[in-house]
Amino acid sequence: MMGFSGFGMGMGGFEMDNDDPTPEDIGIFIPQEELQAWWADMQRKYPQVFPASDPCPDRQWPKDTKIRTYFDGDRSKEMNAIIVGSKMTVEPLSPRGEVYPKYVVRCPPSSSELSYIHLTEAHEEDGWVVVEEGSTNYDNVD
Image (cartoon, rainbow, N blue to C red; front, side):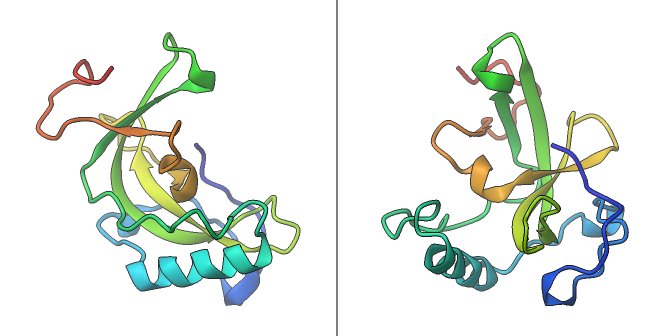
């Protein structure tokens, strides 16, 4: 869950000298059609990672959605965040400099610090869970 910086031109002409999320990213989301096109491209390029049987998430979680996960599955290492947007960013560890969809989040939710969570990982079965809307704390999720 970190922003990335210090790398040059990526695929698709993305200029990524400093790709950390900024306040300008708040409230902006990847169009669903763009996400679906990206997903189909990944299924074609990497069928072992994106099998045809795995559908693209049918929707992104909206702004101000509170989410939680546990670091390495350890319930004593709770991690909470709040979604404030999503964007396509160059993946610095990708050998081809490919772009991936990521949620822009505040982590922890009460901080002003912005970070990224891979959108695909957030929607995995054992990934992040949505905390009930309207909650003032994270105690209502098992």
